[in-house]
Length: 181
Image 1 (cartoon, one colour):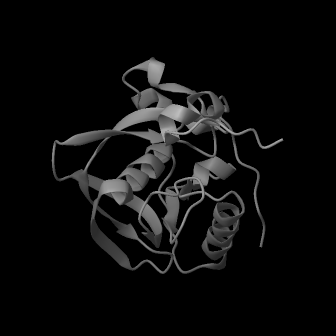
Image 2 (cartoon, rainbow, N blue to C red):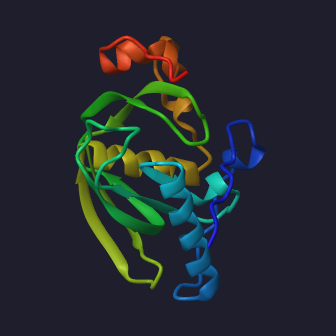
């Protein structure tokens, strides 16, 4: 189908709550999901939410075997999640660095719950019901925030932990930044 342009921070639609999907197993939904898949792969994302490509619907995709933007992370199962609901299973949080396709070149340290339950539907309208921990839980929370008009900088506790990736490189990866020139 198509790789869609990513909507960037500052675009008013990214701050809006997305609408529920009401029709499943239809060509219009399949087309949106294929475009989201194509875009996710093209931009090397860990996940993508429909609002990030200008579609105001409660649809997220996430998952990878290996991701160059998060090379140290374990695989996350590829999932199409529609109309998601998250339930926190522990009050324990962990601060970790996040990036976002809608904020290119930036990273921030964000607290996220370490264990969640999420449910929703796939494109066929079949129920999804899972427990996620660690990075998997972080990705789901990040992507579902997009559906409520929340970007990760809104979750950062200390703004000294937010900046451009090349400036923060050594803090992020423990090695000096190597320019790609």
